[in-house]
Image 1 (tube, chains in turn brown, cyan):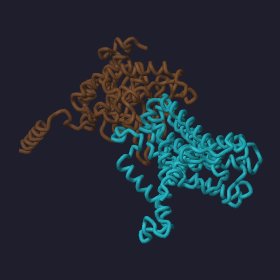
Image 2 (spheres, chains in turn orange, red):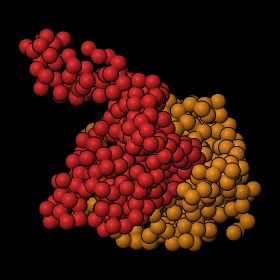
Image 3 (cartoon, rainbow over the protein chains, first blue to last red):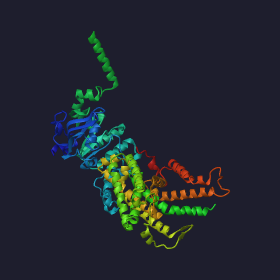
Image 4 (cartoon, rainbow over the protein chains, first blue to last red):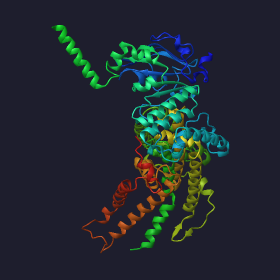
Length: 305
Length: 331
């Protein structure tokens, strides 16, 4: 592993690891954790996903953006084993994972969250956390009835769960049913729960959807801390402020295919991307847009004269 | 009106074999539906397979009672696998459709004329409880309070409630373990569980097998109860009564099926006796222009149905359920 991707060096966004990477779709990365090759997903005649090549760099935060219907979530579902690709292959950390079921993908260390949060409503917050620990002895039917076989491990799991709940500000609610949490708290719980799996790549599907601005800041900090701890993050998001704020690399999809890649500043400045996928006026207020249109109209009128 | 005989008779049913049969069936359903969220509408099928395995191996093929028990349990595992392999990867409702159909197929097949030689058709099988009767340590009638039991019935009761207690202990031990936690999580959202690295399919299959095994025990009790077995014992209403028992007691509670079975069988017998009595004689309590003695026999089902509706409206969590759990919108 190159020195610049170790957790210590990644503390500040390390531009060196990605600085040499050309900002073009499908660019090779120095240390990819996820490599995707010619993956296609058809729904009838529609090619929802048609990605030639994509590499996701280890130890950084990669954003996956694009307009609605671009195939971002479908790609997520394919990569995590929740959907079956029509064709193509991909590998996670050297393991080919394209034919693995979702649970095996998760066990390898590639853990996802969902666009609509999926908390286990009638389990307590603490149980939601505990269940996510992998390799629990008490989860084997043959050993489940004999508590001494798993009690010590259960204590360890509980300690780890409480530490994570503490970090995400949910420790006080550990005995509440997860179904009684607010929308934002559910997002936090889902992220904390994903960490219980001890993932190497965290895949967040719209982590900011439906979260109030105050909580947004705290979520942003949590996502950054994942990178600081050496995890890789791939997230789908529509909130451009968040993308600009925390991502080290941005991948743009449209109509199922990759159309652009690069550091956030350059991708967001790319006229094609802005016009086609973010809307021409994505970063200005409505008044300014109206003023611009008025100006243009004036200019055109002037030109006509 | 003879209240003490009515209450006594009802207690006899609530403590006796009928309640034990439905209690065991409901414990199995509790594992399936209460804990894992699997909609098994074919519990009667598991009971039929086990009950008929026992009865036919002994009565038709002359094998030992114990071989019958073992084969019955083994066949219920096979049935669980047969039902689970094609349906557990699909949405929950497919299992419901397949199980209810399978239970009917089993009942019709067993009762068919073609297999009359083996299963006795609609008349069923008798003479297979010899070994069980031989083990009976009670030789005289047993009287407890206002109830009196014949020796065989009391023996059945002792064995039956012991089995119920063992099943409750097993369910309790399983459901407090991390294994049980995975089942409950699958009930809540199986995709979330999958995303956390659990093999949901395997857990659902294990749940189906365990609940089916407990259902098989209910089938044995059903066969032993009258020392005979007929296909009509395993009609679809058997499954629905078991669901009623489960919902009355409270799903996903270890003792829910036990309390549910006691209440259900007490009420249904008591109501039958009450309406029977109240419409009898020259000057019945309920005048004949309201209902006749013949009509009174269906009153118990009408009242039970009404009670079930009221329960679902005012206490949907059952006797033991936790109101907080239901207040949560699962979606």
